Length: 474
Image (cartoon, one colour):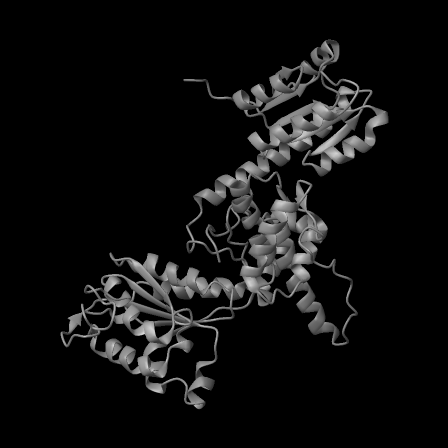
């Protein structure tokens, strides 16, 4: 069993033996390990998991160029994405150093090396690494949120709390929201939190032809129609003991609405071609992006069925009404889909975060996820840009005239966006806003806000409330 480290590890990658030894004895607060080329540096990263790496870009077999150094950056960040790399380069290679930072390095330092000044840069990198590590630990210890939900906005957190309250009951739930807002994800959260032993069975009422929908829902007996060669359970029976999710219930034909209503009242089903009543214990969750009351007025949806399926109504806000959430979601998607595609992208550029904040997202979370997935495949740098996402960079807006109301709205949005861009780190958000931590906490209290709940992309500091766990797809 290896001994527990009491000091952070600093890896010095330098091909000059004299400078390497000089640097080795210049960092008392670290456990220092050294490497002279890319292979030995990669091996040291695997073995020691350093907090900080100082890296000379001119490594053998290309000491006069930067190809080996750039390749080392890519390999180190692939193995240890949270490691902070400080690039060391000559005065004639400043452009390469800037490119290295664009590829994910923390900072750069130009030769000749002054150990005292370099120590300051390395120490800043170490402090940032420790803060991020503590945030990840706090996030992992936080109370789990709804599976799959990334949320920081008050509107979405209110939905999460409502789902948590409703889930253990037997009430029929109606989820209302625009396409792409995550209705199926919330339906699955309702099921997972319900404690029901059975599985969740989903059916899209708009995707199945009317002639087949009845047999899909209620099943059929052998010989009930041409091609019915054996008795088959319907989706309702398959959900026995669990949850039935009826997506796009507004598209359910009138002829089936009466039969669904009878099932909801009696909790029995009759397969096509049979008169036998089969009792079913199932929790029903419905969802639609349509205005059911308008459909009732048009005679296209039964009023009695409407009141039966909306014992509890959950209205899901569109992404444009969830300030700060889009950036959190983008980072969550980068983390998840980046692993799936083997992408080297690690985050968002400031302009990309601003563009995501400003965009209206007519396709909601689904559109955001699709743009992120496409950008991860096509991006050429370690941080996505607005151009990668095919989003316009926002221009400053003209100030409206109602000054007090606009000031409060701007203040609320600024706090939400700062928390999102700082990934939930309250101290960092306060620095972005140019205010103190107590002032930021006071503003959060004023506007009923909490630090974001998200998928490993945010965290509190010094005991600040933590974001919720987020995973999965919305």
